[in-house]
Amino acid sequence: MEDSKYYYGLGKRKTSVAKVRLYTGNGTVVINGEVPEKSIPRKSLMQEIMHPLVVTNTQNKFNIQIKVAGGGQSGWSGAISHGIARALLKYDDSLKSILRKNGLLTRDARVKERKKPGLKRARKAPQYTKR
Image (cartoon, rainbow, N blue to C red; front, side, top):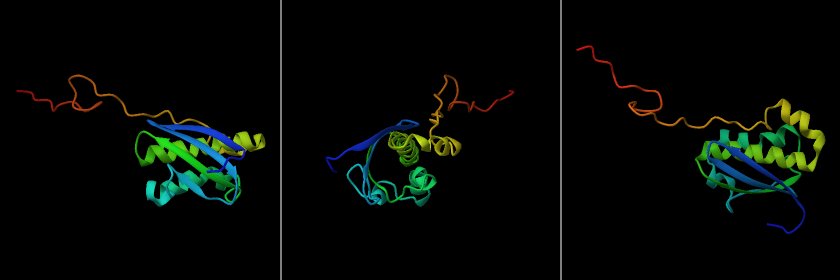
């Protein structure tokens, strides 16, 4: 994007990892070199991505460059949101209380549970037959 100073944040969610760079600018967002609508078409997920900026009232202050990998759209949006929140902390440490209050700095540790032997899925057992 640009070669000027940026604020970096690494966000994670499920198996997704997002590397976020905030440049001073007018509010353009680039996800993996594309427009965000191409990568994440669902509006609710786009709102989740922009939530840290909305809460801190910095929507049009930064151009955002994002590289995200692993997982699907839901994981991506959570990871990007987490990364933006962390990058905003580097920009201004006084935003910490606002971001913390909205739960944006806490890494959501929920991941898919592994399949256990003898079961169909992580917890679903085969139907019990008496005879």
